[in-house]
Length: 201
Image (tube, rainbow, N blue to C red; front, side, top):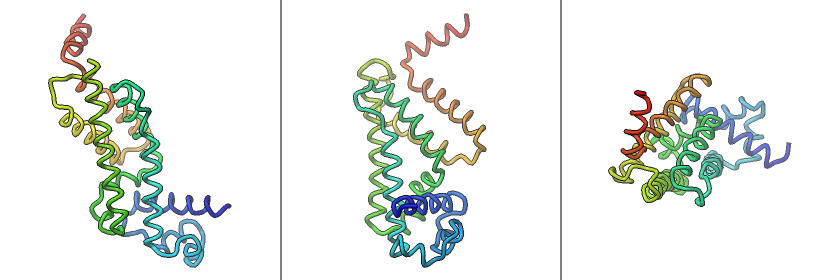
């Protein structure tokens, strides 16, 4: 295994430890045990626990950045794709939301890493808000509610789903239900009334 692949494996296993046992359980000894290496071998890839934590922040930034769809898409479609992509990303790496939303982890990080994760949260909120504003201007998203307020509701829904401990099949059902609920919430009042009339006929 190349050095880069081994480092990525160690970071992903560290994320898994955090997801299943919490940040307090992450140590070079625990990581070494999970991957079948000696603690000394871990230090060949990461000079310190802080270096490992920085690498985890790098990995989280990379994974989450990939969930942002093209800015060329219409607002509503961009938002829908984002919700789906972000859900898939955290399903593959359940440690990520626990890290990003954990005060304990932010305090454990070097200051730069903590600031970078906080910036990821802010960029996500800004992205969602901009999608909603664009969708409102395009007439696809209700404009009778402030875009920033709707963004908080969408972000909260995505975060709570990300933190779900449901089994994989139940998570898929839950994800569909969350997307359907958000679609209903974001509908323009005229479309919402039209959908209700169609449902009654």
